[in-house]
Length: 148
Image 1 (cartoon, helix red, strand yellow):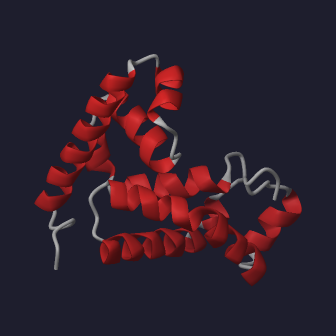
Image 2 (tube, helix red, strand yellow):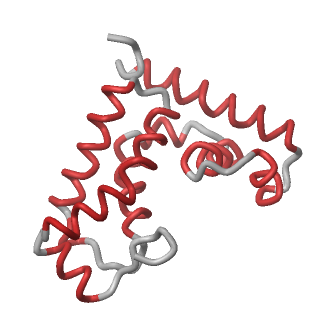
């Protein structure tokens, strides 16, 4: 690993494809917390977020042969997460989706997001709040995100 990002090479990719426990553990250790935060930010309860993250990792392991290593492992995992909640994320405007990703998943400050997106800091707060509310409403419509 380098700089907090799992680096891919043929050896590492081969280890993942062989389902090497140490290689898989490094993916879980590196990406699990970010996936969990993203799921919680989408409105999932703690237990639902944990279940969703486990499901993402199961899907990753089941589909590892299709992973060509052109993207980072985290990008592939977030793709799986977003696919599982895709229509809810599609309901966000591009600005809301960008701000949600940067604030919730990447854990950047409003100031950092403002510099990246070009939006005023106050507008970042509005976009983030609206994204979370839209996601919560969509997920509740699917039976997710409610306390059990």
